[in-house]
Amino acid sequence: MKSNRNLTRGEGRRLGNAALIAFMLGSLLVLSLVRARFSPIGKPGEAIKAEEQEAMRKESVKMDTLEAADEAATSAAEEEEEETQPKAGDTTAGGGGGSGGSGVSSTAVAAASTTDLLTKPVCYESSRRSDTCEATGDVRVHGRCQTIHISPLEQEWKVKPYCRKHDAFALSHVKEWALRPLSGTDTSTAVPHCTVNSSATAFVLSTGGFTGNPFHDYTDVLIPAFITAHRFAGEVQFLVSSFKSWWTNRYMQIFQRLSKYEVVDIDNDDEVRCYRSVVVGPTFHKELGVDASRTPSGYSMVDFRTMLRGAFGLERAVAEPSGDRWDIRHRPRLLIISRRNSRTFLNERAMADMAMSLGFDVRVGEPEISTDVSKFARLVNSADVMVGVHGAGLTNMVFLPAGAVLIQVVPYGGLEWLARGTFKEPAADMQIHYLEYMIQLDETTLSEQYPKDDPVLKDPYSIHKQGWNALKTVYLDKQNVRPHLGRLKNTFMEALKLLPHGHTN
Image 1: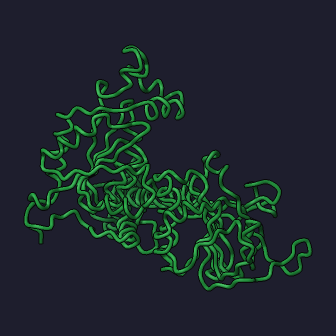
Image 2: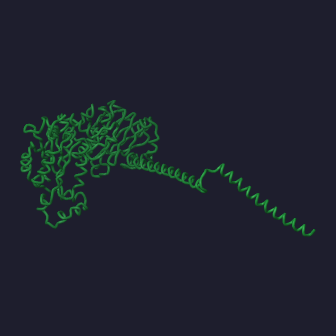
Image 3: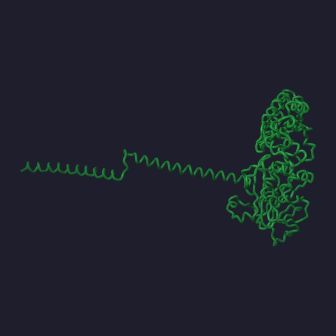
């Protein structure tokens, strides 16, 4: 009996173990079936890895998008801060904060409604060189006081309408203008009553600063005036501050081309001139140039030059021969820009003779003594090649026909950067070919004025470091040049190759 009872207990243990094993196997089977039903096919961990990679890719795309948006926003903000940051005037000091102690932020300007933008003046940095104010509404210009009363207007603004805003010396010759609220309830200031009414847009600009130098005439005043006034299609009146009658008369054809109205010496004007809109201060783009991407309808330096041809009656739009080929009757014309006081060609006559031997019809022009802009413009327009030493006289390149060649003779002294910014870079926008002739040490009179080991000759950049006045005195005011005729001949021959020979279509 005892042995039978023990056997039964052993069998029970085995049966219990078997049942446990069977349960575990069954559970594993069920789990396998469940996984097969709800998990993707593949090796263990592959699905998880793929999901993680997809998630990382999406996150990467998201971060790239956010970074791109952030960079675009930052770039736009920086551009807006540089180009359109409003500047309020100060009623007690020339050029500080607004009369209310604060200016209009660029964000507020961007968020304003169209109506607000049309009726509220906006004074802003139109470029790194110019401030511009624009207003629409009840505009009353009191020229003798350099004051413009405007309604509606919430604060006072002040601006000097000349395109060298960071040049203290230039601005010392430019009068400041104030834009003030026009309010009939303000007893402290008498409300000016209109004596002259006009439907044109008033455009206030200054001919102070550096005007009188042709380069500055065009860079600081005439081209910015074109940039600003062109969009009005003649319905604009120039109100000229710091008026110089000789200067205005010199360029009267340009003003008459841009405006249907008389030019007003506004500082000496006793009238209260009333308009529907006003612009104070022209917009600057670049040296001797127009940035077409920044103009309302894409007009460019080509359009400015077209305007000049119309203003001065210039016949040649393109430097093309009138016959099938250049011949003795239609030789290419070379114009030498002559200087008298400095940077003079000491062998000018020999240069002309050499050019004639190459087949050029040679002319010599002296812009420094010419007072008739139209006459000199016609002379330049008749030329196919113009050559001159770096200086204001080369500004006459604006009258050259498209396809002509400008040869800038760069004085000794490491002045390539100056030559590049003033005339080389503008040439392309004018559709003019550009060549340079660099004066060497044995071609300059500086080699006769200074010892061979003097820094002026050996280390020009040490003179540059002393500032503009030192550079100008030595390398621009004291230097005359005598180009090697052999080297210059090669440059003239290169210019000939750039001119349009052969048949024209």
